[in-house]
Length: 311
Image (cartoon, rainbow, N blue to C red; front, side, top):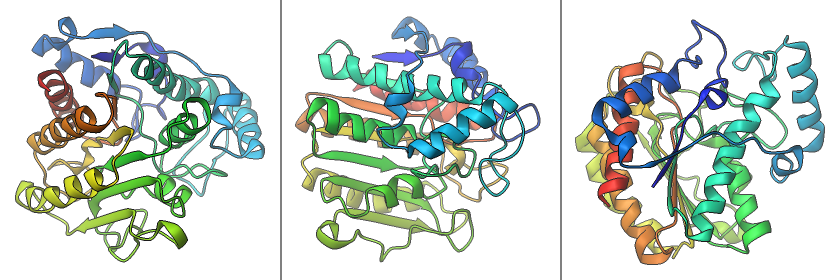
C-alpha cells in the first residue's frame, strides 16, 4: 500500500483560519506516525501533473482562469467559498498529480492500494471551482482511466457529509460510472443536491445511488444503508474502485451535522477493498476529501489506511 505525504501536497489550503487550511495534512500524518502506520506502507512524495492532464476533465478556459488567478493571488474562483491564493495552480496540480501517480502504480500492479489525504475535491465542476475545490481530481482520475487505460466501468463511492455534486453531474449521463453517495440531506447542507430520486439520466438511469441522511445520523444509519451501497457497486462489476472518504461526516465537524464515528470509514474502506479484490485485481484509490475537525480527519483517515492494510 502507498500513502502520499509531503509539503507540496500540504500546500493546497486556503490559509490559517480557513476550514480547509494547510495544516490538515499534518494533523493526519501526526496520527499516522503515532500509530506506526508509516512503517507499514510505502510513503511517496507528492507528484505534480501538467496542464494537459487537468484538461482531461476541466474546460481549458477554466484552467487558464485558475492559472491567472494563481499568479495574481487575489479574487475568487466561485461565488465566495474558494479564494485564489498565490501558487494555487501548482498546489492543485500536486493533488491531481499524486492521484495520477498512484493510479499508474495501481494499474501497473506495483501498489494496488493508494491513499491520498489531500484529495477528493468533489465539488469542482468542469468549468468552475466550488466549495473549496479548484480541480476535481476524482473527475480527472475517471477520465484518465478511460482515455489512458481503456477502463470503462468505474465505481465511485462518496461518504463525505457533502454531496459529491461535481463528480455526480459530470457523469450523470454515463452508464458505466457507478456512483454511490451517502451524505447529509441537501435541505440542510451545501450544495443542496443529491436527492434520492436523482438516479442518473438517459441511458444512465439506475446507475447512480444517492442516500441523503438527516442531520445527526450516526453509525446506526450508516450500517443500515451500507449493504445497499455494496450491492449497488457489486452489480456494476467495476474495473476500478474509488472512495472519497470525507471525514466531515464524523461527529463534531464544525461545518456539518453528521455523527458517524471513524469506524464507519474503516468499514467502508474494508468492504470496498473486498469488492476491488473481487472485480479489479485489488485496484483501489481512497481520497481524504473533506473534514474540518483536525482530530476527526486524523482518526477517520487513519482508520481508512488501517482497513486498507488489513484488507
